[in-house]
Image 1: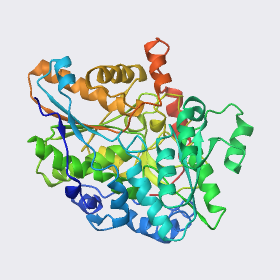
Image 2 (image 1 turned 30 degrees about the horizontal axis):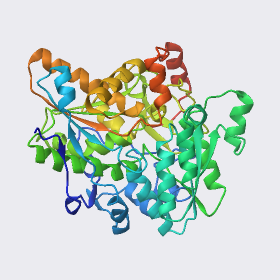
Image 3 (image 1 turned 180 degrees about the vertical axis):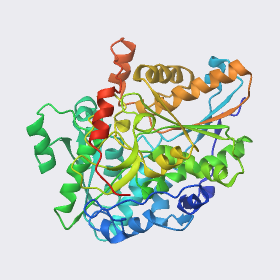
Image 4 (image 1 turned 135 degrees about the vertical axis):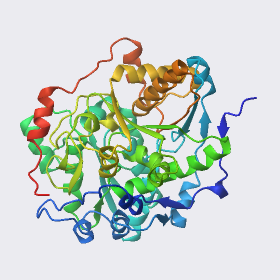
Length: 457
């Protein structure tokens, strides 16, 4: 029998998160500082205190390479971690490729995705600071579900602003949030000024993550018992997700292989950063300079491949810090692709920085081709992946086919960030020939450039 699953013992599960910030000074250019949205000056820890607990704020700026995972967080992690590393033997056979394909599957968490890794940590640190209620946004719903679960673990209230197009098309994710005790509303909503302003402008607005963030932030700052929680983009979120990459390093060692190519989907950068950053330190140090790392985004929302590298807000209303990132403009309203978690206008500053320096690659792929890959993966490996994760599968398959053509026996590692069991209507559209592709146009690019705030760097 071929070995196809690599189980890491719970006693061997990593007990520290990895923080790449101490390793970034070794690069040719420093990571640009985040700026205060009002003053334009470099952001300081006190500036973030109205939104986040101080423990998370200090992680955002931490000079420590490794951060201890609190015992209370490890206790909850132990209910579903470590996740399994799989060898995709059946997919390899179907592709007739000499490549070895591995995938780290995060869809076995109670939330069905990787998002729980940071949700638990964020809920814990907020609870410790005396916060009773957390607000957040969610795109496709994976993050909203994860934070709903985490808040219930720590006996806190959770309010979720869900992007309207996903609220309507993915009702089971909304129901799951409510089953865990969260309150979920469609964004734009009538509950905030940001939402009302957008509805006045466009009553049929499909919403965006940037707009939902504005609503959640506005809600949080209006109450003393409430903090805001973000599921991607910021450094402390990526730090918590590095449990994925740290586990995968141990499991690839068990398999006796080292990845030549690491692939992940990107929207804001959380699952991608969580997987690749622990591997990136080998590339930065020079130990594995030839390793390729590929970020895959939707053709309809191509922040890395099309967006300028510039300072921009993380939300529509301009309430968040200014971040130097690849962006399509904070007012960008993405097309209603089914990969709702990737419909974001900007990219994590760390991911953007690594891309600018040429340490990672980026590709934008059309929606139909990702579902084609998702179906092929399901029919070979048996897992129906989330639409977001199918982006990584698409490029992994493309790279495996290149290996067939060249005869190279490369090792390909995928971060398979979540399952697609609540995305069956989207798969039905693809199988029925009704799935639509969307393109990012020249007009969209003009808007992206026009909407960027003026910043004196």
